[in-house]
Structures are given as C-alpha cells and as structure tokens.
Amino acid sequence: MSNNSEYKAFTDQWMQSWEYLDRNQKSMNAVFDMCFNNGKFHIVCSEIDQQYSKYKEELEKLANYIAKGAYVIAYNIICNPSDIRDEDLSGETEFRKKQFADSFPDYLQYLLTNGRDPFLSIVYTHSAMLDSAYQMRHMYFDGKNWLNLKGEALINGTWTSANGFKYADATSDLMMRMTA
Image (cartoon, rainbow, N blue to C red; front, side, top):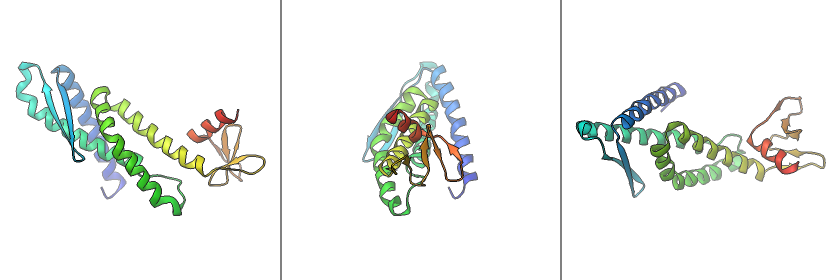
C-alpha cells in the first residue's frame, strides 16, 4: 500500500469483513482449522451446520482473506518501530521481523478463537513490549534521573523534556513501578 489513505481503506474493509465473518461463523456454527506449511497458512471450515453447507467455500475464502489481512496489519504494527536510533534501525527491524514470524501462527489462532479485538490487543501489546525493551536497553541514569534516548527525564512517572513537555507511555509506567 503506497500511502496512509490506502492503508486506512484496507484496514476499514478488513474490520468490516471481520464483522461479517464473525456474525456468520456464529450463526452457522462454523469451526475453522488452520494449517501452516513452509510459512504459508491456509484456513478451512471443518464444521458447519448442514443447512449452511453451501456457504462453506465462501466462508473459507473470507476467513483466508481475514488471515491475510491480519498478517498485513500485525506486520505493520510490530515490524515498523518508532523512536529508534538510525544506527539501530535495520537491526531492530530484523529482530522484530523474526519476533513477528515466530509469533504470527499463534496470533492467527488467537484471532480465530477469540476475535478481532483481542487479537489487535495482543498485537499492540507485543509492539509496546518491543518498544519498551528497546527504550529500556538505551536508557541511562544521569545521577539524578533516568533519561530516555531523547534526553527526556523520568520524573514522577512521566517523561519530561527540556522545554517542560510531559507524557507517559508503557516504558515510563514500567520504570515507575520498578523504581518505586
């Protein structure tokens, strides 16, 4: 996808498609199974109420579309780090790609079992954990405060910049718990 508006349109379509699949999966008592082979996945509808059997192939196509979309969305969330030093960007990106590849089969199973919102929550949590781990590896203590890569000081649970701007994130929250 070449720009943000195309990606937004894609994610909006994916969200709507998920709603359609979820509604039909429940009403038709459909059960999906997935298999991975050489890094590729395929989803089949292993069970469906007899009266809806004619929709089985359509549901499988939709489930595979959802899985491919989940891959794109999760990849974009996990594998595109922010606030990374230029000299670390390629190594950190490669590390995240490996984390993503190792985790995606479980994430996809989680999506099919638990739904879209819990899936997105897990993906965003994984991304926040990777961001925090990177930030924590590069923090330093200046004799008074913990400082992040931008030189912002951790004061009372928030990052405070030299101009007084304050904000909190997962790393500041974790650091406050560790230093309390």
